[in-house]
Each structure stands twice: as structure tokens, then as C-alpha cells.
Image 1 (cartoon, rainbow, N blue to C red):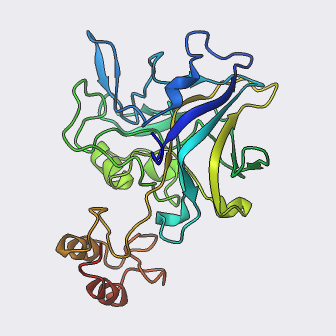
Image 2: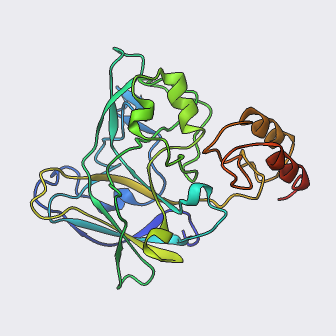
Image 3: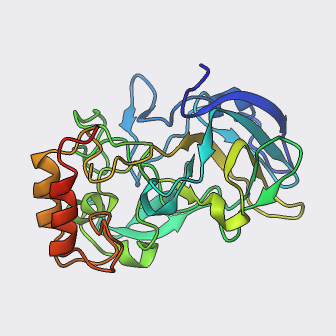
Length: 281
């Protein structure tokens, strides 16, 4: 499990007030996030509308409680990480559906929680403004419907962060196809930028809920972001013609990973840079 891009060891766990008695196994936060949930007789695909909820999938924190995890490989503050996000926390947050079954986001049911990071497990830094159990909810498959029972064939990338410029208000009332497009192949989760606390890397993550809180965060997993090869827009591991097609599809857009020179818009200069990177692995 060494060098794995997720949590591989539970350092400590304290169940706080209000932590669900049935969800107090911290080992469930190890490994990758869940793509399916439910029972054998009533299976569910994990989508932004039906999150992981089984006792072997999530751990409940509770007020005054905490969960400390060691990562199999450190999260690195790398300029090659998409959107500057270095680490992703996955919970069982989920959207309400305002379309009566079609998968159109309304409210996000989330239970907060503080995210702390540390390189040595001794000195901790609180990530400002981040909610461990918060938007964006997990999406397990690109080609599964919002309330499907069977998994899709195209898994999302749990190491690819969502664009942090996309907020709940951007998704509200969209149809599910547009929600999938907004996720852009990501599995969702809450992004963490180590630069926000001045850390170059982190080996440890702690999720805690302050004393007196009225909600209990439930945590599924923590993933280290995969650094992008310059120009590898689809994350295939090589810069090729598919990336050219991806860039052309983003032409003229702002807040896009295809904005390779960070000018604020995808344009001909980005295309030139991409052509110069063809074949990079």
C-alpha cells in the first residue's frame, strides 16, 4: 500500500457527540472512494444524488471528534496539479433533486467539518474555508444516471479535482447531462490547496468537527491529486491528438484547464503550446 494515492493508515479516531453509532469504523476511510453502495437486493450507483452510506464505506466524526489519516504518498503542492488543487476529500454529501427524478441539483446536504493537513503529523494547518463534508458530492461513473442501480462503464477519475470556480449555484437547476459535463471526468470531492497554508507537501490529513457543532461529517476517502503532464488534457498519460480535440472544444473559454499559458482564455497561443508538447509522456 506504500506509494498509494490515498490514505493507507488510520493514525487516530475519536468519535464525537452525535457520531452515528453504526458508522464508527475508521478503516472505511482507507483506500479509494466508493463507486457503488446499497445492499445486494437494493444496489445503488454512487452519484451526486445518492451517496455512499453503508457501514463499511463511511465513518462518522461527530462534534468534538476527529479522524487522522496517513497518506500512502504525500500530497505535493505542484504547479502541474490541476487548478492548484493537491488533495481531495470525499464524503457522503449529496444534492436534492428538484426535477422529480431527472437529476437537477437544488440544495446540497452537507455536514461540514474542518480539514487540517500536516507534513510530520505534529504541526497542523487548518485549510481556510474548506468543508470536509461539503460540495462537491461524489460521482462514480460518467455514464450512469442520477439514480441508477447498476454501475456505468466509464469510471470518473478520483484523482482529478473539479474546477473550484464551479460552485453549487452554477449547478442548480441544470439537467444531469450538464452536471456530468461540469464535473468534466472528475469524481467530485472537496479540493485542498496546500499553498493556502504554505505547505510544500503533506503526509497526514485530519478531519475534525468543533465541539458544539450540530452535524456530524461522514468521510469516505482522501485522494492525492495526480499531476498533469503539460498538455495532457484528458489524463491519458501522453499528449496526443485527443488532447488537441479537447483544447479545440474549449476554445474561447475561461477558467479552463486548456488555458495552458494561464492568460485567462483558451486561444491560439495555447494551441501552439500544445502542439509543441505532442508526444510528451
